[in-house]
Amino acid sequence: MTIGAAEIMNPGGRGLPLARDLREALAIYARRTWPTHTSSYAAKAWGISKDTAKNLLRGSASDTTVTAILRAGGWRLATAVIGATIGQSLEDWIASERERLARERRSYEDRERALVAMASTLAVGAGMGLRRPSEPDLRDDREDRPRHRRMGGGRD
Image (cartoon, rainbow, N blue to C red):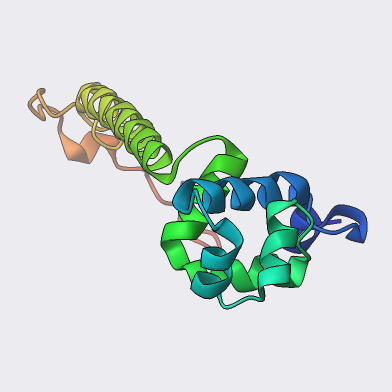
């Protein structure tokens, strides 16, 4: 069985796997953004009712509310809240991916250099009895040709 994104994001159909942490991160974000009158400012900024904003600050917002807030807040809100939920900011993840890809690129470049060096020492047409690139061809081709027999009889 192949596991898809839906199964990973919602194992066993029990809601968001990080629901509590995500809600807490949204509440912290709201409190830090608006230290006073938080529910009023959050309600206005995210297009939700003041009661819904109060529920969010208590950590009991519904999935629908969380989705609406993330949509209203856009990438600025989403990257901060999801980064807090994951435990790594988007900027840190991008930097670590760049480092990983640079190491991977260096590894491929090293492997390519090694393969080029190996290839330069192999005989041209290895396994076919041909010469190495650095060796002159001194053999008489007529001696190396296979002798063909005539089909249907004839002299051997």
